[in-house]
Image 1 (cartoon, rainbow over the protein chains, first blue to last red):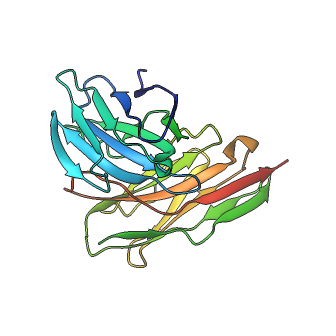
Image 2: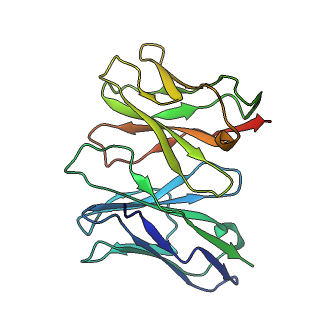
Amino acid sequence: AAGVIQSPRHLIKEKRETATLKCYPIPRHDTVYWYQQGPGQDPQFLISFYEKMQSDKGSIPDRFSAQQFSDYHSELNMSSLELGDSALYFCASSFRGVKDYGYTFGSGTRLTVV
Amino acid sequence: AQTVTQSQPEMSVQEAETVTLSCTYDTSESNYYLFWYKQPPSRQMILVIRQEAYKQQNATENRFSVNFQKAAKSFSLKISDSQLGDTAMYFCAFMKHGSNYQLIWGAGTKLIIKP
């Protein structure tokens, strides 16, 4: 079965650079979520999109932005990167039309800022 | 606001033993969902089991079962016949019904299965 695809798997950037993380949800899923997980921490919700519109916003820095495109894939854009942005970034997807709570996560993108 | 508490930072058991991970939560909601996620060293986040608050019957998935005590706001995970592959971080998570489906996470319990 198709899963949530995230790219790239690993990314190394220098401070003040920009990074773009991509997420391809499970086919027919209409909702995408982004989470950030720092070393030894639980995931922190960043932002979510439902039917290409932002549906909820969490602890996402102003330096970050995200969108969901017409094909439902989503991109997280991160600018002016800081050392503290080093983390595992998860994307998850779900289909709200079916009460299948407990959405599916991708394998994550490990971002290292040096 | 909802909170999720996992009071055991780390646990270690022998292979084939049974282990119970604890989770408590705080909410004023009556309709919600609870989850256990497993995160092995590969860092993949894997759904282990889910429980709908309006269902009194405890969820079971093969060797994994929960003890859901709604009045006590407790949601513990029992792993029977533990296997080496069960070694992972285990996160308890809460989702409010009708919300934007955001998960609220506990801090996690590191479970080590020893051979």
